[in-house]
Image (spheres, helix red, strand yellow):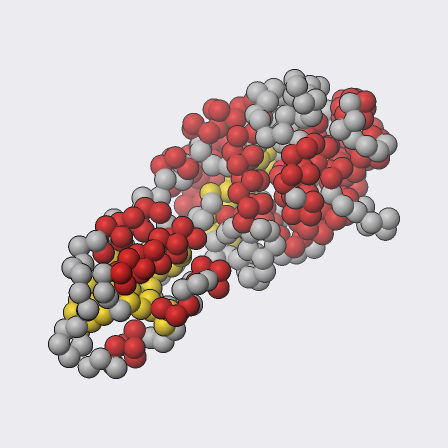
Length: 424
Ligand code: GLU
């Protein structure tokens, strides 16, 4: 049997192909020379599988899709506090290249519009021999899992017509947001925009964000979870510029577009999606790309606000065992976040006081959030107070050291069956 996912992607591509609305971004001359009919779609899963269809080997420049990753790199390297001193997180409701700053603070409203992105670029630490754009190229190559390169033609083409970005640079220098020569920083920002990718690269890159900062194919941790959360939040509220509200309500996936025709989207914990079709609308978004995202979100139920329904139950089974049925086993399953932990504690509440040994088996849990661990151990403490000996069986090592802190004595690492043998 063959998985139908590639057929579905092909079907989506075919059904959106007829839409020839929009126009090539001609303010960058080199972008006006591309084949407008190129069309590609890719999807990545959090375990590193990439599905793709159409012109999935064609490279195009990231343009503004580089912005969230420059932001991620700056956050990772210099920290949120320093970054927030220079760039805000408020949606601007304005065009991507609007010449404006936040009213009171005089800093760019967010890192997704050009003024904020130029500023973010300036925050990337660099060496004399390795420029900021090169730092970003290396970082993105790590995310994509292959060596990416710059498109020198697009870069030099944009340099010639970058009057507006230069004026943004000078404005930012005037108010002290930029602390160096604005020419060099704007040039670096334009170079960052010229990093070339295919939809497969983009899907892989999106997959890292969907997977909480861990590269799904190599298992390498490339970004802190807190950085991923910050980046995705800003993509959700500001990534689609002055169409962000429309996008959030119809598509509901954190995303970023680029004027070369790419759109990258990330559904946390689930999938990364990337499309490429060069004709763009008045906001700078790929027309067919928007169609595809709307369609896939609807058909695949990907809207963030649909939420993933929490486990209907956290309890797989409860049974008595041991010589005199003096051991009560609770086998748990699914994920342990606040909702499930609350459910679990409510179930444990019904356990009568007494000397029965309580075994909480975590073997079939797939994830324990910190709040889940805290609530679990609070439950353990209360059961003990009621007179029960209590153990937590964690044979798969799902609890982190930090989550176990202060409670290691109640955690058993052996398999449940092995542990229970002692009581037969
Ligand atoms: N390099 C482009 C610019 O700064 C990127 C714009 C975009 O992709 O939205 O104008």
